[in-house]
Image (tube, rainbow, N blue to C red; front, side, top):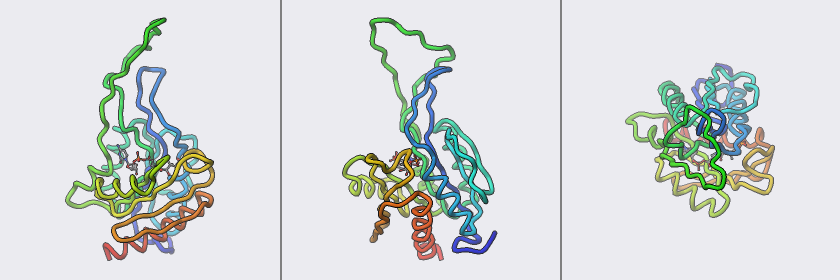
Length: 222
Ligand code: PMT
């Protein structure tokens, strides 16, 4: 461990989208680029933490100082990688946009177009990674993210409670913010408090978010 505000802490970060395969050439994904989570991982390493980064399918280089990177594709793979990393982690920061559903069946062969007919896909619900961690008797300090197009505060505070989180970072998506962009703006919520982090580059925001996480972590866990 180096010096810095997070020295001595093991921090697990998830970043990027998940891809849920339909057949060998198609998948269901989302627009997360991984930039927010990679910025958090880099900032945590700069502040002295030992960082493990679980990355969905993204085209980003591993940030300097990150101790371990685990690449995954699907929500099920991310679930397994996060559960395994969480056993050694003091703090888990979930910046990944995890697919809520996956195709019920993955076709081993390319699905052929049936001209003139609609096609329906049956989807099954994916397990919630954060909720399954918070249900464990011992677990890291849990920081979730919530990306919403509307009623951001309402939905984020709902997720804070429902998923049993210590803190949630709410970001409005659209208009050059959130997914794929260089900038973001975040409102942090925890039980009994909130902090507004106005629009800034993701690297700068990551440092501000971590300062608040470190403070809340020390208050909660000593
Ligand atoms: O990657 P970028 O392009 O930089 O974009 C960043 C971002 C917008 C993706 C990021 O800042 C962000 O908001 N990530 C969360 C996206 C989201 O909408 O999450 P959610 O509302 O589906 O889930 C809420 C929380 O539960 C998240 O912390 C998520 O990681 C977690 N989750 C969700 C589903 C699931 N099955 N398991 C989970 O743990």
